[in-house]
Image (cartoon, rainbow over all chains, first blue to last red; front, side, top):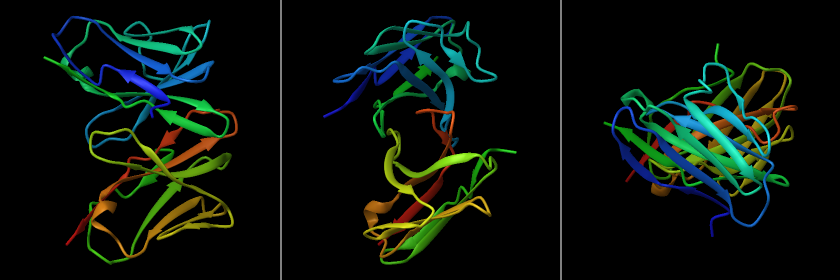
Length: 113
Length: 111
């Protein structure tokens, strides 16, 4: 079964609204989780590192005020895309590590119309 | 220059063929190397780690050349189910569990 679960798997929202994506580690605690974004035919790009109990660390070029990350517990990180625009339509995926293994969520397809 | 570069393909090969993918990385301090497989609209899945001594897992062989900063993946006796995008992944010593992905190489195995 899934070790890292992501929800929702697909979401369609109107331009200007906000969308929240959840990433949960199901049977382990993760002090850090990672959020990636993948545009069609492009590579998975690290957006930010989510740190439990502290601010997320964003990669260069990723707007922290647009992509809000909250890691309030050791098993949950959320990514909120605020004021979504059609160009934010993408595949968003999270990951967490345990020991020598990295687990990915199932990914979330966001379409902004 | 991108940190991890791959030929995007697509590679179209018949069943049973042998196909090789290459990947180069720019950061000489890179520490760990992997090949992931990604099926259409799905999350990436670890195919194999890549070691300096090279490693083999069934029909798959991965090799690392640190001097040339080059990684390869060889697939023998291709199966239809091998059709996917193969992602070259690199990490550095201070990146923790964060992965640096290549763009991926698309493989289509045909009957």
